[in-house]
Image 1 (spheres, rainbow, N blue to C red):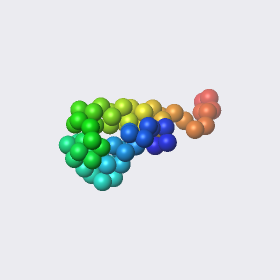
Image 2: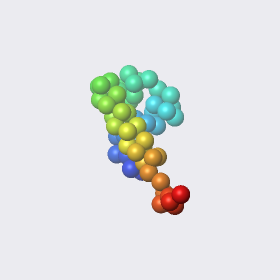
Image 3: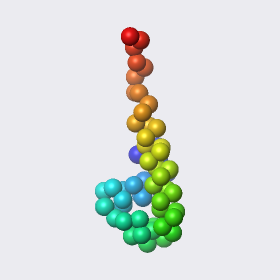
Length: 61
């Protein structure tokens, strides 16, 4: 989560912790629903990349 922008973090928390719909998140954040959808998509992409990167170099087989 630390790799996300403040806006991305807020959107992720509101969506996946508070379980709000995109329209509700848009109202809370004062942005359009499209902005919320885009922000969440960028956040998921950023988190997915962070999750795929190994913390330790893999040993050759």
